[in-house]
Length: 323
Image (cartoon, rainbow, N blue to C red; front, side):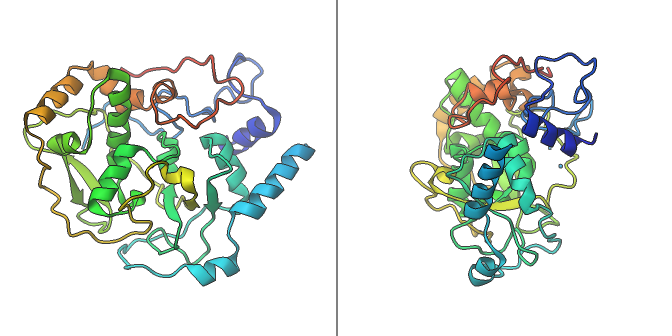
């Protein structure tokens, strides 16, 4: 049974690895659908040993409702969407199909209030789809839930870019920092983040942005991946008040755009930012491993999953930590 078939089996029949032994369990050797592996908050996996820091009737009725109310039709798409600034040279179409949406909602705890639009054959991630924002599945696999985390939103607001313009390690750092803030009582906001990191446009993939550690500053979030592959064609568009939470999107762009901001300039922060950074660095290095910071156990202990309900069988699960 391949992984996707196993996830559907779990979804439809309530069968999971939780609470069952490996003997006679067809799912025992398959990565859990519950974003609870030793690679962090999702089945994004592909972590090497050492990684440098720098891819029934009720059910049928529910499915019909979801597909009817949250997936845009081709006709609607043709009327609304249009080519944006044409930023990406390598720009694949989305491989997500309409029938995938139920599974996505189940796996990633996407509530009904968040509408989902499956991109049409001609739409790309950098297209303008008014009122909708593109989200990669890898962001969800890494633990992002709605509303979009505040620190991630603040960075996009500052640079007036869309969240999907960030490279994977950028959103991993931002989500990890926000989780560490809450669990360890360190008030790390935009100024403190820029004390240690700056944004840099990708050298080859223009329109995408990396988060780079400043020279001479210690890495707060560790063990970031360098081998993400096959994620750029797995995206959807979403909308709804819960996507942004309060106080709303602010200056965050709902579509890809160039930014004229000075990437390498740190915001004024002074001694306060230095002290808060020291407090973060005092946290055990194992706790700052992004795979630990973004484990389900820790995400549920933070505000990042405040609107995510526990699925049956997940409450008692102990997450394996990689230290």
